[in-house]
Length: 284
Image (cartoon, rainbow, N blue to C red; front, top):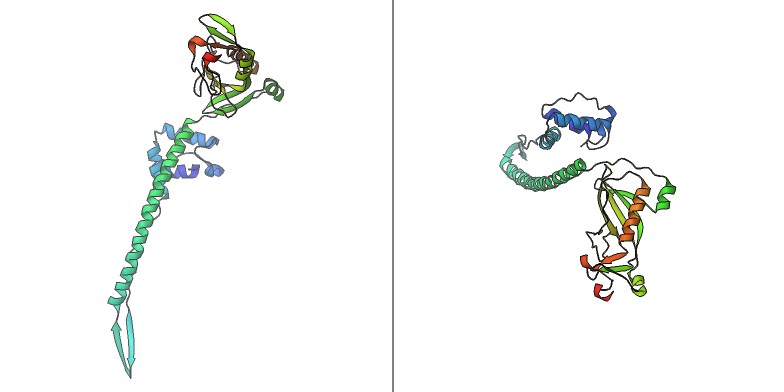
């Protein structure tokens, strides 16, 4: 719905908006247009609900009701026989034919109306879903780092569901097993077999607070290992900080700390005894 349609919808509900939308009339109500933001604030302050706004939009855009009343007509045949003219009325015959055709056409229109009503219902639900998504999505402030800094750290940045996502390349390379406090080195053959190139993924809020850290594969899915699976990773004694200072080197140091923690497999707190394509813990 654009700003013009929104203002018209409010008028249909008896609400006048003192806002000159001018050339912005075609901007979407859910856009970042300053007037759209101002109009949304006015709607919220006025206590107008989504249902009321949609009702007003429907009233403002509803087409005029079609008039199916047909004009009166007459049907007369003038028969010329010799010098006489005989008028034969065919109103009944024509009326029946017209009636049948109109009934057939009205039946078609009723079917079309049902289809339009069904499609309208689907469109309405889609609109509500999109409006809900727009209301609950947040535009995050743009982060700015030099290309040199990002390349030097191997850092990639994106956003998902209103959170910043930072990705750093990481080598999964376990070297030791701890069992009942006894630390043992893994064999060179198994070390080589366990080695994987993965990524550490930090999820951080707009307020620079850590929500989680995950090890992921190149396809973005969680990495299966002895202390993690597709949905969860255990970092042992490593504790994520509550907040981030906004600097890339801080994330690099944290990624390095996590990589060091992955070098040790704690046999007493395993999440998986035999992750995909890795030896059973008994065989290490």
